Structures are given as structure tokens and as C-alpha cells.
Amino acid sequence: MNRFFYILAILGFIFISGCVPSHGGLSKDNEKKHVFVDASQRFYLVKKKFSVGKVMEAYQVAQAITSNDKDYAAARLFLKKTLNPARIHLLRYYKSIAKKAERERNWNKAWVNYKQTAEFSAKPEVFDSNIASVYLHREQLRLNTLLKQRRLEDHALLQGLKGYQVPQGVAQYDVIFLAFSKQHHADLYQRAEQAYLAANAYVSKKKWVPAYVLIESHLRLMPDSLIGKELLYTIQKAWLKGLAIPKGLSEKRVVKKKISVPLSPKEVKKPVVLLKSVVLSKSDIQALVKDQRWIEAQDAAVIYQEHQGEGADTLLQGINVQIKRLAGQAFQRGSRAFQQEYIDQAVQFWDEAVQFEPSNETYLDALNRALSLQERLHLLRHKK
Image (spheres, rainbow, N blue to C red):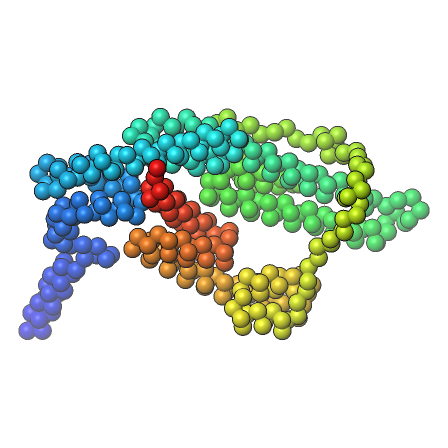
């Protein structure tokens, strides 16, 4: 008898499990109902998407409306009178911005706007070469600038080793010079190690330019590093075609002759403003926290930590935890607003998240997406 009820319980559980959507999805019946509802309200969806600036999504839905749908004629008219003119207006606008930026060698702006142009084009592949070209220019500029700076810094550190050679008149194995030299070697080793770790992190994100800059630095400081050579090989295999690595620094490029330029009378009279960090006390920083002035509190806590203030690590850690929490909350609010197509609210919340964590790429991408949509809405509403 018990076995009979046991079997019935299992069958009942299987039956119930089959009726419950897995992972929050829809059952087959619900899917059919969902599709049916969408089919009956496609034209409403077209107008809704267009009203919030999602022009190409509206365009695609309108194109999918067939002659069997009751709103076919209205959708065709909306395509002809509203959607297509809007699409072409946006295409021409972003194309003109991209070309102007390209002439001004503002490669990132050109790249972003050529991608926007392609999005509104009936033949996006036409702009592939433009997108690839300005992207290559942008990455080349980034590579040249970062490499030059990193090489200068590494060169200065390596040259610094010569400064700890014991001069004539001091004991050959002077403990003071040895201690300074040892510390300098430790600094070089730490920089090399950090460069490898950061390069590896960039490789995992497929960001090859900063990865190369850092792995070159690592190998400059530790030429025999096997893990460094292995990571360099990985980067080289994925290297962007056409991206040229500048030659190394020469001694002449590093050591520059100082040129003195005489000041004009006006410049001589100008007061010299010295920028210095103000070290707030722990109680002052806690007052900022109490007033929820988190960014100011974080900046002050960093300076306080640099000056080895009492309890600085704990204070800064607590502020960082709160900022991370507030940034996450702002991002979630922005995501909900964006899903509900409240674009202005999404921009406001996501901007707040970025203010809290400016280096968070997820927050930055979301904000840029919302700003782009907001710009499109403005262009459509103020179309001449």
C-alpha cells in the first residue's frame, strides 16, 4: 500500500514539474499565447518602440507584419511616412558627424558614429571599411601613446640602478648603498609582476593593446620570464592586422636638452598656484560619510591613507563597500527604468552609478547606450 502511494506521489511530482516553466521561462502553451498576443499587437509595438527612439527595432517589427495582419496597411503607411524618413534622417546625421570627426582625426568619435550610421543603413556592410579604418587609427594612437609613456618610465627605473653604484671614497660594500639598491630592485620586480598580472587580465578581456604595452614592460624588466614570453605569444597571435608596434626608445629620445623660454611680463606677474592635497582628519572624513558625501569621503580617505592616518585602511574599506553598494543600486534602478523604456530616468540612474564607479565598464556601456537612445529621441523630436 505504501509503495502504491509512493508511486502516485512520484507521478504527481513529474506531472507538476512538467507544467512549471523551467528557469523562469514560458511553457509551450504560454509561448503560443505570447506569440499570438504579439501578432495581434505588432503595430502597437511598432509605434511604442518608435516613441522611445528604438527606430530599427520598430522598423524590423513593421517589416515582419504580413498582408494577413489586420494592421498591414497602417504598418506600411507608417513605414513609408514615418519610419523610413526617420531612419534616413538619423543615418545622414551620424554619417556627417563621423566624416567630420574623421577629418579632425578624432578617431573614437568617428568610430562610434560610423557604427551608428551602419545601424540605420539598409546595407550596413557598406560602412565596414570606414569602421575598421578609424578603429585601427584609434588603436594605433592608443598604442603609440601608452608605449611611449611606459617605455620612458621603465627606462628611468632601469637607469636608476646606476645611481646606487658605490662611488669612490665610500666603502666598496657600503650597507647604505646596498640597502638602497636592494629596494630599487624590489621596486622593479614588483612593477614587472604587476605588469604581468594586468596584462593577463587584459588578455582575458581581449584588449590587446594594453595587454601588449604591459607584457612588453614586464619583459623589459624581466627579460628571461618564460610566462611573459608565453603571454606575449598569445597576444601576437591575436594581434590586429595593420597595427604597427613603434620601435624602442633610443638614448637620444630619452635624454632631452632642456630649453629655457623667457616669460612675458604678464606671465611673470601671474601668481604661482601650488596644488597640494589637504589631509582631513578622521573625524572630518566620518562627517562626510554621515552627510552621505561619498565621493568626497573616498577621496579624502585615500589621502588620509597615503599619510598613514590611524585606522585609514578600515575607514577607506568601509567607504568603498558603501560606494559599491550604492553604485549597484543605482545601476539596478537604471536597468528597470530602461526595461520600462523610461530613457531619461535610465540615464539619470546609470550616470549616478558611473559617478560612484567610473572604471566599471558595465556601467559605462549601459550609460552610453542610454545616452545614444536619448540623443536619437532628441533628433527625431526636433527634426527639421
